[in-house]
Amino acid sequence: MAYRLLSISSGHGEDNHASYIIRALRERRSEIEISAVPVSGLGRDYSRLGVPIVGPTKVMPSGGFFYQQKGAIWDDIRAGLIGLTLGQILAVRRAARRHDGVLAVGDVVSQTLAWLSGLPWVGFISPLSALQRGRVPLSEPLPRVLASQRCWTIATKDPVSARDLRDRGFAHARVGGMVAVDWLKPGGRDLEVPRGARVVAVLPGSRPPEATRNLGLLLHFIRAAERAARGAPPLAWRAALVAAVRAEVPALAASEGWNWDGAWLSDPETGAQVFCPDDAFADIVHAAEAGVGLAGLALEQVAAAGKPILQFPGEGPQFIPRFVRRQERLLGELAHTVSMEVPGPEAFDTGAATLLRLLDDPETPRRFGAYAAARFCPEGASYRIADMVLAMLDGAAAGRPRRPGTQDMLEKVE
Image (cartoon, rainbow, N blue to C red; front, side, top):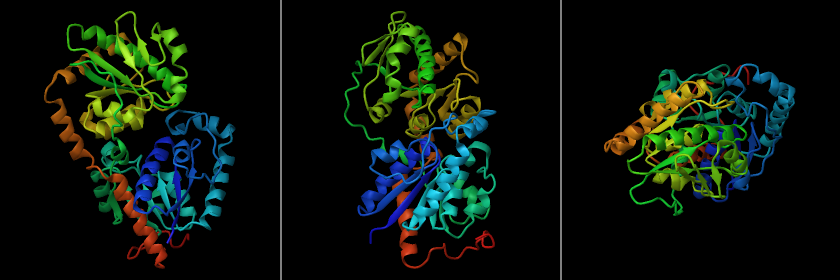
C-alpha cells in the first residue's frame, strides 16, 4: 500500500530535520508519497528532495525568529504573517483529505497544525530539550495537543527529554536523536589540508545577510587565532558556505581587507587562508577537530559528532545572546562561548586561546566523543523516527487512527 504522508515543519532547521527523516522513509518504503507544508521560509530542503509543497510560503523579516527579538513579531505581522498562517491552516485541512498521516517537526506551531489536520501524527519536537532548562518547555497549547490520542509518538532529540516527558504523563514519548548525524557521510572531497595541520570548521550560518555578517566576525576571530598560533602547527580553516553567502563573499572580502579568488579567502595581514569548497559540509565536519561559528543546526551537528565548538553572538536575528545560552544548555561541555555579546579584539584573543588549548590537548577527541555519545544518541535517529511514522501509518491503515490505550485529554475539544 502506498501511504500518503504530510510533513509539517516550523523553520529552516526543522525543514532540514524533516528532509533527513524523509530520506530514511524512502529507503524503508520507496512507494511512500510525501507532501510538505513548511511554515517558515520557502522549504528548499523539501524541493531538493522533489517533495511538493502544498501550502503558501513566504520569508518573514524575522526569518522565523520573532520570539527572540523584541518587536520582531510586529514586523512579521505587517509583512503578512496572519494571512500566511491562515493560508497554511487551510492548506493543512485541505491536504488532510488526501493524506493518511502527518510528520510534524518543530514545537507549538507545527504540532498544533498537525492536530488541526484531524489526522494521526508523529511529533518530532526537535527544538525542545530538557537539557536546556531541566524540563522540556511546553508552552500552551502544546501539552494538550501532544496528549491527543492522534499523537502516536512524541520523538525527542535526546534521552533526558524523553524521560522527562514520560515522567510528566506522556507515555508515548520516545528517544529520536540527532537525525542530521546519520547523513554526515564524507563525500571524498579533497579539502587540501597540509600535512600536520589542524582542521577547524568555519560555520557562519545559511541565511544572508545575517550569515554574511557572521562570516565577517569569523574572519576577525581567524586573524586572532593565527596571531596566537605562530610557531605552532598550522591551522587549516575550512568554511561551509551556502551559495547565497558565497555570492556575497567578494564584497565582504574587500570590506574586511581579505583577498578572494573564488575558492580561497586569504589575509595579507596574518597569512591566514580559508578554503571554501562547494558542497563539502559533511567532509569538513568529518575532518575537523573543532568548529567555530554562529550557526545553530550546523554547530549542533559538529558537536553531536563529538567535536568541541566555539560560539559567540552576532547581530541577529538568530544567533543572539539568548540563542547562544540555549546552545550552551543543549550542548553542555561541547560548547565554548567566546563572549555573550558581539566580540571585540580582547574577546577574540580569549577565544583564540581557548581554541588552541582544545587543539593542543591530546585527550580532546576521546573526551568529547564520549561526552557526545552519552548526551545524545547513537546514529540512526532518522531511521528510528521513520519507523515511528510507519508504525503510525500501519496502525491508521488497520483502522486505528488513534493511539490505543491512552486517554485523550482533548476529547471534549475534538
